[in-house]
Length: 287
Image (cartoon, rainbow, N blue to C red):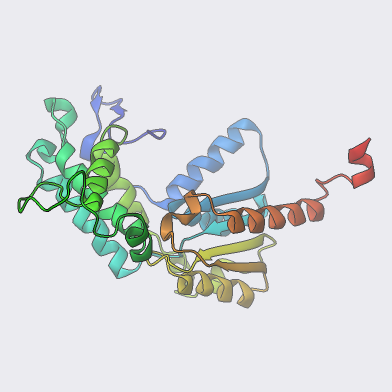
């Protein structure tokens, strides 16, 4: 559901791109965003804010266009994917490609849809967005609409029913090939790679102000990844603040009602606004 993707029409053939669509990177996404801003006549951004893959884009903005970004808020992210994260993505991709309806990525042309494969991919990924504590608090080992187990492979447990719902609802709003491309883009992201493996060099000379946010129960992008970003920014003499928020909501915390996160980001942006001269004095604002 983005701008252009594998389900878009290839102008050379008049048919959907499918797997002929080029593999894209986080850098490509940010470059496209910058081109849009150029088209709109917007030279600089007050703040770029995002979580997870959006956080990767924030970091890429700060690296590629530091002169255009006054403030940056990367949340629950990292400068590169871990081997574990790549492994989880590969399981999801294989689930999609193993679905007979995938048809080698040509399902749009053949009138099919790899719904089951995409649903399984979403179920697996969704587990990584949560924490054990959150799953236990929400579901525990409670049965779904029954008193006793059926001793079958039906969705006996509430958590099973929840995951099946997440999978089935996801396929209604997401293209399977797009899932392959977006997960691959995250896998290839490595901000230090173009700087001889030295992350601090990616931010060398930056004037951007940073606020890094992580969550204690996020095991997909743990706090250690955020601390690595902070250390690199400190080494490059950048202005940086850091907050680790205590929560049991897991990686998805950045999408949920998390008052402490809201307060921290609001405070940072208010301070950045004053430094940028965007906030009027209280007396003038009252008039």
